[in-house]
Image (cartoon, rainbow, N blue to C red):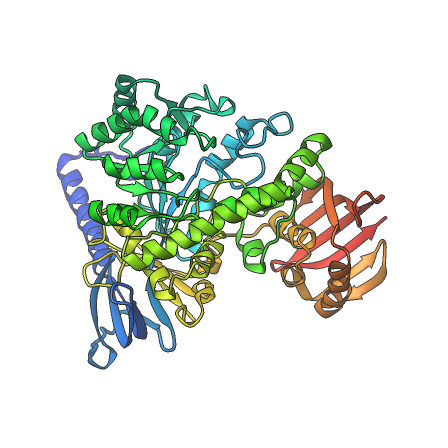
Length: 604
């Protein structure tokens, strides 16, 4: 009988009962693991002959080679001096621009950006239960993170989430397909919307009615290790009561700030009125997550922010998302249609076919009155003027979208936000600063990331075009480097046949011919069932549908039923060509090959 016996563990690994044999095998396994770890740590990538964006000094440095070892930038030197090892990975950066990874300094994972995500803004829970919305955002968090990375965003700051999302973030900490994630817990507030109350660990709000309760709520959140405590400083819109209400709630706000700071935790505050913003800063707020929109800021207020080192995130775009969705006047660019989650984007157009027409008409009318439009225009003008004034004065501005709110889609809303910042008068260099190093400053981590420097995290974006010449070029992404991993952005999201058909539907409903044509194969064929050829090739589609889009402003298609069988998607569609006109019902079958719609069969 042998002195040892070969066994197999539950993981399928062979081991031996003989102690000496075990020691030898364990030693070998340890050496192999160590060699693997060392090879990962010392694997090197070189980006050669590239132009680096020095965001801190607002200048380009051409002809550089950047060395990446593990997850860090290990060297930067002129390309002419670089000595590259034979076994290194080399990326040719000739004619390209290397930026630090972008930061979205204001998002909300607990909100999808779709129509059903804020029942306190529009209550559609009878159509889609809010529990389904909560399940959706948790289930799709990985995909949402990948969309951020696809857009060059290597860091996201959620300034108001739920306890369940604070728990979930840990599962993405080491993933190179996820941006770095920082979070605040549920919003501490003196007003809790009834539609979002009593949700337990899925609740986005914690109501504070006294100073002692406020302190207890801060301590309760600290168990989950948030990066911020967030205050929702809401005082109403009655101009005669704004300051009185602000001062009434100030003891609670101050108690939250003091308790958070005592526990070495930063405080972010939602304060859109000048008085609430002023009181927040005077009492130690670290981060204002919105612009003041009710008045033009005084020089004294500007100096107050500078004195306290308070950072401001303007969030210029989010207000338009609500108004344009409810007012049924949304438009979307080809970039937004392609980069958004197709189903949440599509849901924004459900306002056009809600069965509760009384509700949809009421929201449309309320969002479209001359008084409301004038008020929105004044608030937007104030925000733009204030941003220009603060930026020029040297107040630290951080780019953030407030993504997750209705009409502000995750990741794809970044470009509209920075274009709004540009429209305010900020220079493209100022915008790049706000979108990189200033986002790191929000977290006091500017020594770790936010610029391209030796020793910092290798979070970078390689662009094919110059974003200083045109800020839109920030979307011309060649590669994303995240935690040292080099990623082709086109590999991050696998577009399923159903996603592709939904994207095609969105482009149809937004009457965007470029986004519509992009979903079809070059030699696509469209048939009237069973075999009558109606159109062939993308140019035929562009000519036919382009004319229809240009002349049919009320065009809208609703999916009544959808069946997916492998690479075939079958839709029952209801199409309305004019407001109040008769709807046409059709069955449409889409055949997808190689990521494009190859054949379409229409049955009316």
